[in-house]
Image 1 (tube, one colour):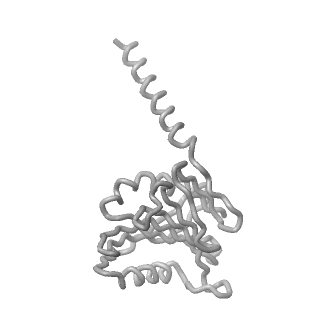
Image 2 (cartoon, rainbow, N blue to C red):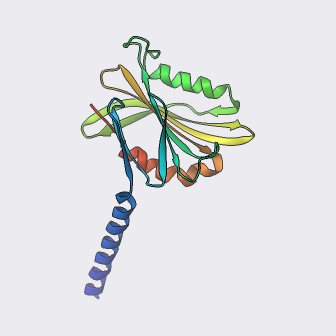
Image 3 (cartoon, helix red, strand yellow):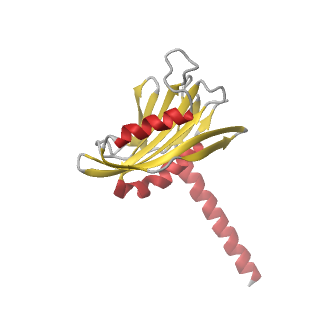
Length: 183
């Protein structure tokens, strides 16, 4: 009986390892100098550079305007010429205000978010909002993280129709977990 149990555990462990390896082996890595971060995204997703400081990721087959997307932006602080944001609170307030002007928006209170990877620990904020756009309900997660030197803020945005949000969240969570901000 003990031998059967040990064999079962080995099979489960190896199966899990193979599954996780397969899940991540086919992923792509976004890494371009000047952006200050890398992240892994699924093989069936693509990215588009919306501007020199905004990258948007979406599933290849969901190229319509209602598809779930992940966007990452770099915003300058007032420590840099032309920068707009004094601190993390100013970044969050700007995004909250942008959402509040949309139809039937509900913006939930911001919370502290701590990024902690590879010895880099940064304290930012995150919040969730729900709103109506073109007669469809959307849900959005926004996270803002300052760079150590305070000259730049990285903003992570996950947006999806409300009924798709939870379905795609595990994929987005994997992308977020792979997000590595350079020192």
